[in-house]
View 1 (cartoon, rainbow, N blue to C red):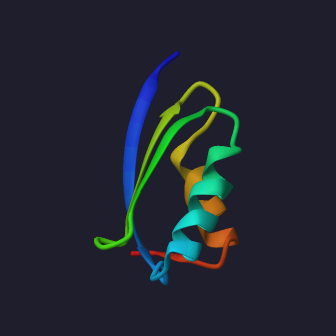
View 2 (cartoon, helix red, strand yellow):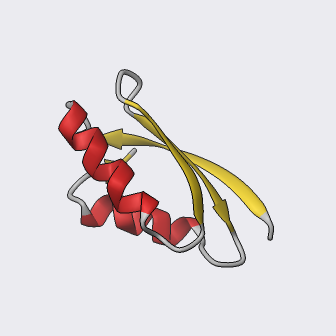
Amino acid sequence: MAVQNIAFNVEGMTTDESAGIIKNSLSVLNGVLEVIVDLNARRVAVEYDDERLNDEIIKETIEDADFSIK
């Protein structure tokens, strides 16, 4: 396993509900180890196994939930 960390600034994440949507969407991906959502900073940090997942899939998952990456 090769653990990687990546963080994104997310536009449109303004409520606890929207933060929960993002966290739940990412948590179900195969290879995600941890998701940390900072609602005040509008930032999402993801720890993942890059042998099973890549940053493009993580970005697409956030965008598929109707949020934008800065």
